[in-house]
Image 1 (spheres, rainbow, N blue to C red):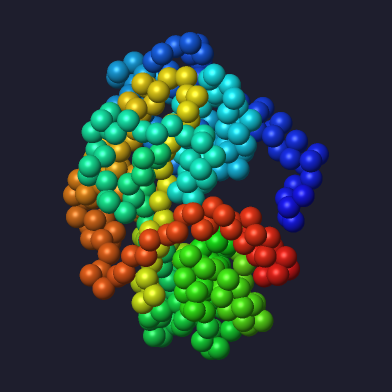
Image 2: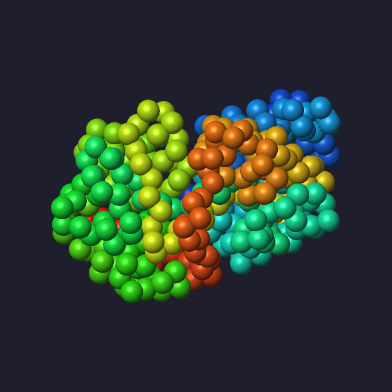
Length: 348
């Protein structure tokens, strides 16, 4: 068994939980060609997808949406469990880029028919794939409290300033991004995270704080428990516009552009309705709606142009910002070992 992997009994329990996850919408029949099943994140993501894509653009066409609120892990497990079925549960899955890449490598996602996606040519070239379309994107940045940090950090390397001591914060679910950041400082690259491990152990000895969720890091920056954090532009803008004293710095090493998007499983029951959803979700109006609440940038140039000027001004990257391409294949091959190291050496 791979180190850090769940036991056979534990995996079985996870798989059973994934298969038992409920999907439902009153009045829908499984053979209804105008109904599709979307597995996405809950909370605000669900609220804004319904408000800006599903209700105004799909419902008038008679397309009904069965929405399952889930997370990347259970969603992936269900796709794996149903891969040999003629028709699986989902017609569209919503995941972060690295998970969508893994699903593609495991042959779980259909190759997209680009002719059915009216917006495809308008997608930022760096975010184009043939197995998924992006919904939102945001660069990785440095977040800091200006009341505690007098001089704006210029690079990730500045986080190793001894003056910060135990006032640096990262979040647990972003382990791969944090190791990648340290690799850029330690002489590695986005295709070699190994040098980042020794650099992170330096931060561990200095007392780096590891928070379980984004909200914990935001609160820590607000109270001064943490002065500097590794995060994303969307989180920084969301907190700053909610009154949290946060400033944003683009590291000289460069910023990875994180994105989340949609794929269509190979055994989707209603791919026609799935394509209707993709076109609705990536429409300019829907993109403007998401950005006004989630503070993430649209993945299309026309979507960015549709955003109100005050929001667009904050989302636009400065000319000095450098965007780095993420090596998805490296992460796919090494994610499990990186997570094991994080849990056993860095978090422990």
